[in-house]
Amino acid sequence: MKTLKGILLLIIFLAFNKLSAQDSGDLFMVKEIKKAYENKTRSFDGKPGINYFQNRTDYKISAEFFPETRIIEGKEIITYKNNSPDSLSDLYVKLYQDLYKKGVSRDWDIGSVDLHDGVEIKSIKINGNEIDVNSNRVKRNSTIMHLYLLKKINPKSTNKIEIEWSLIIPETVCIRMGTYDKTNFMIAFWYPKISVYDDINGWNTIPHKGQCEYYNDYGDFDVEIIVPSDFNVWSSGVLQNTEEIFNEKYINRINKAAVSDEIVHVITKDDRTENNITKKAKKHTWKFRADYLPDFAFAVSNKYLWDASSVKVCEKRVIVNAVYKENSKDFHEVADISKKTIDYFSTKIPAIPYPYPQLTAFNGKGGMEFPGMINDGDADDRNGTLFVTSHEIGHTYFPFYVGTNEQKYAWIDEGLITFFPRKVIVEYTDEKGYNPFKNLFRSYNYYAGSFSEIPLMISSTNTGVAYRYQAYSRSSIAFYTLFELIGKENFNKGLQEYTKRWNGKHPTPYDLFFTFNEVVGEDLAWFWEPWFFDLGYADLSIGELNKKSEITELTIENKGSFPVPINLEIIYMDNTKLQFNKASSIWKNGAKSFLVEIPKGEIKKIILDTELTPDAFPRDNILEF
Image (tube, rainbow, N blue to C red; front, side, top):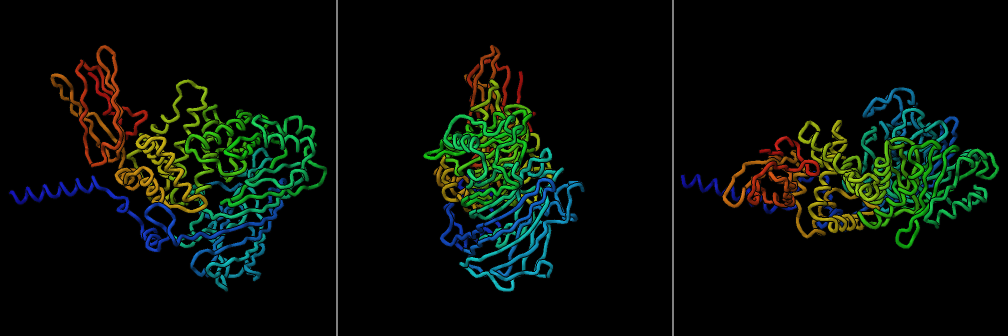
């Protein structure tokens, strides 16, 4: 019996010791990422490894958009720098608008009204050698075009790729972009784009099917957009030929906005009626330039109004545009909200200067982000406008400035940007007592522990109908809980250091985890593992109550497996209240219960918070006497 007892004690000791000395180096890691660490392209301190590489794509694009037919015809010259140590015998090109191609697999049914025959590829040249687009050297699968090369692309080489194409912009079913009120267009994912070749998977061959978003390399953009002269264009880039296009009155307004804190009405309702905004011509060529972006979008309209201003960020001024329909419910305030949001992100949370020279908010539908641009519909109320504006602007940092692979880890950018932009609402709401975080917890508490419960480290492409819960709800609650645990200063420092290391690059979640460990000065594996890797959920409950002569002992049980804070309220019979709060770190050594000592008194009610504390089963969180 003694031997058996000794063995049992040893097992318990080892199990407890494992829980109390967790190491982020022991977190589960798929073999593709393990290989990256072995190859020293990644390092366990959260920094790029000594052998880290990243390919680059610079685009020179000339395109004409025909608003009446919604057709774009374009030519592009891509300077592709293979910075990898590998010879590439294939080239993969993303044709995102093939999402609307007849017969292509999609994540949901979009009907037939906008379906077409796919992006028309008219010609392809690689280093001067033409490829027959109808030959077996060109294969198309979903939204990916696979080119089989006769001559390999050498390591450390610079290559010239030329593509001529045309496509049609959707009119009715506008997924993240498209046509609004016939003559207003948000145009994105519109040019053939070289896929990412990285140190983890090699070529990214996962097609875009609608739900999961994007993964792009960085490069410079030199873009010319030709449109009829009565249409205006805004884009991810900075306009280079303002004076060639606009009449003097509008040049003056644009220039004023670029140096002013006030909102300048660049194009008003009366201006649209007068229709003398641009110089007389049949067509105008709008020339844009953007440095080191992961993508490029643009918007076109001959009806929308235009407000502009700028906000000082460090030693520069960021130009802010709001482009919107005359009868919009809320966009008259969006330029001002955008300014406030950029200032908040730049100075408060995450206190990282807004990295791009401009931001254009376009009044389309829903909410979608692009580098230097957002596409938002009208919100139901001002708080909704604050959130959708700050959320989409927040994506400037993640996944654009820091190049997250959204197809695998949508929760990094969506979780962060569902969490901290709500701080903007707290700052600027005009509704007294409004707390924008409560609906986050309602969503988490409803779905946690259900069939939607999928660990965050499961690839986003494998989450199916649970995508939104995984990418937005569980992740944002995890980041909220982390923020409360380590505090604003450490949270900001963690994101600042992570961004410093990985801006313009492609991190994995481990780079985020390891960076925060270093900044906080503690291995947070005990937090990362349950919240990001494990099946499980948060669930505290009120346990045994033991009344003693001087105090009352209350046991709080952690029935779930996630570390969360204890936020307890004791209400006495005389209606006096006592608050008890304990950080989520109380669970880091594997404890399953915590003893709270309550001062003597006749207790009326005990409430274990579920409004701002995650809890999958809140029914056992209130005890009344």
